Length: 389
Image (cartoon, rainbow, N blue to C red; front, top):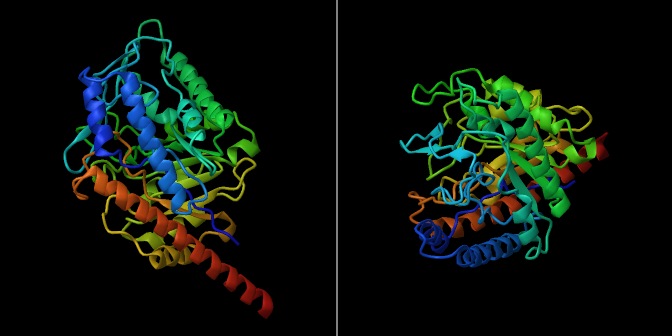
């Protein structure tokens, strides 16, 4: 038996690329010059990830402003912001080190993406020798673009949500059409929705149920075969080596999260204090039949926020423990989070973005090796049980 393993998506952007983004915002270089540097970073990301032995790779999101804003703006600095948006939206999250990330604000309809993730897939397909995955943003996150307590004149919230679901569906379908083997939906706001931050207006409003329902509005448009390759990623955030909701109990999230009819889930777990308790929760609440697909549970075995490189034996041990609670045919491994969900990320605990980038590939290699070790051990265990039966 082989336990599947795959990355979440992002990798630290090289310092050269982060400097180029700042120069592009300042008008010092052209978009073509920026693209050349992005091309180099994508090619390096794919080649180095392939060299780890990873069975599926990504471009590391080197072209995206962030996991959340790629459909809306060219850079985190706001260059190329779609003309239906203003920069002064609500906070997406306030992190434990005090910094925050902010979303744009929708000022008029109709809502449309400026950039689809398939554009990244098309470029990456020219560089990759192995199957590609692509991460996309959840409709639940982008629903926060609409004002919380007001209505946009001439464009109701329901009109917006209808347009939003259409755009999210299009984003996923175009990724598959461009050649992506897998598409995972970033749902980091799920855990944050269970938190009540008095400094962040949207949290504490009990929005998790509406998030789940909205995401299912999109997922349910896909066939069973398609949904088997559509995943959901959850984590407590991972930006500038800091989190936004690690204090939220997974017991508050998982029962609802597994009501989404996705074929697989990528979950932060390596950095959890009581991992075995959460493995048990995952086993209890994930579904063998989610509207026609089995839910495969990719547990996080790598902590991108910690510069220490995990040993392959640690990875294997975590998977062996998880297999006590999660059926082996529905068990996988992943990283806790993308290594740099936002394009500008100084990586303070790592020393520099370039150092963090080198460490990321070492960690991915450990995940791949450790997952293979666990696969072998579980196969041996299964054979032993079969002989003694």
